[in-house]
Length: 549
Ligand SMILES: Cc1cc2nc3c(=O)[nH]c(=O)nc-3n(C[C@H](O)[C@H](O)[C@H](O)COP(=O)(O)OP(=O)(O)OC[C@H]3O[C@@H](n4cnc5c(N)ncnc54)[C@H](O)[C@@H]3O)c2cc1C
Image (cartoon, rainbow, N blue to C red):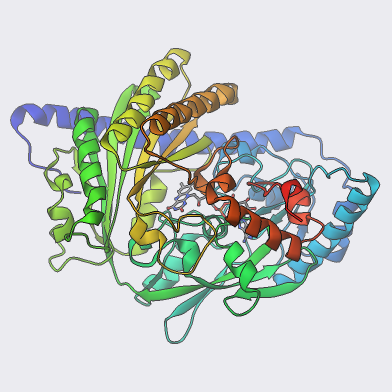
């Protein structure tokens, strides 16, 4: 790791800050993770196993090898403890169905659909409470996105195929893969896909929500690079959605989340990629103003002839670590090919303001994609209570400053309440017109974007359930404060990235009316009774009662 040369007086500060960094990482990795995992296990052990329901028994007899109904079994505990967010680990389903192939999944969906029909019939017009949830990589921070209390979890963890085509232009990726599964296979062949930036995140949830990638500047959103989907529909039918087969469903899946069925595999476009240049700069918080202005200038380069779409980011993260009362800045930079001289920064980033910023530490280097995405993962360990929330603004210096001021102002109240283990992080990342117009058409509502946008998100984690409401409401108030400023300043944008939204947000509203109507029509065509609206819980639903006839 390169540490910048510093003068004698700053060397002491450097030693202190590096020690603090080591403390933070040690704190996150050694202490919190095991504690949280034990907590979830204990909560399950404490609950008295209930008599399996009729539905569980039906599933178990149809799929004896794939249903885990014994709540005290190791397999059951492993499944429910394998979510990223601690709140999700605390939800205890009645059973976990882990199909081994699309046919088994189809069988399970048919049983769930029969049960759903009976429930709906029994209740007349009333909706069901929800029967099941679908789990991909288990990385959604939304409680109940991929699990269900006392219901059925469809766990896709056995859908882990990664098969590149012979000519290297496409890859079949199982619906339960994590991005590490994909990059490990592709790294060895000098290939990559437009995929996630964190190795442990699931392909399913990320891709169905849109997907921001290191490769988005070159090829567009992750969803816009999916050639075809194999999907199990509400009827249990296994079908394919591509530009020629069910093209409406193909487009709807590019941002429509889990509203249409369960995707068993994605066929993604692939391209040559041997190594990338990526990593983080760590800076002290007194550099805030410089980081904000450098971020703004860097995002604005899309309008200059020095713009180079091999450059991705910057992703600027401002964190407050309550345990040690420290604010720290980290900035991710990326260039999706190795520079000629691997020891030097790529010209694009050398000529950006980031190269001159005084920093504590830099991890920037040429590396394989798996290693770069593992670095992201190390900074986001599982087993903590989590909340995300986001908004979208124009790349305007005053709005960026207002977003940071709102983040900063919240720290005082978070400090007062002493939220144990709190890490409060504001993230800013670009969303450029150049990216959102590339690749296949999608319903995200970004076609009319003609200027640089910035996704402003909060990723917040802490230790204790007693602080859930306070942290969530502080996060909400902070995002709303930024939105009020942006609206008044005419720098707000309607897009809300579904995968960064909190429960109270309405990401589909941001897609625009025509796109929402399109998604509702597709849902009605492929799932007329609304199994994936009312029977499948989790994530954001389309709200079909408003559908136009
Ligand atoms: C640490 C971290 C890093 C992240 N980095 C990025 C990033 O670089 N770029 C980015 O765009 N986003 C990123 N995200 C956001 C990420 O896209 C979402 O959290 C996403 O929901 C994770 O998908 P998953 O499959 O792991 O989650 P899950 O919790 O398993 O699923 C999320 C939702 O998708 C549905 N779903 C999952 N798989 C399927 C399937 N095969 N068929 C039907 N429905 C399915 C589930 O039902 C659920 O509602 C990150 C999140 C975290 C926590």
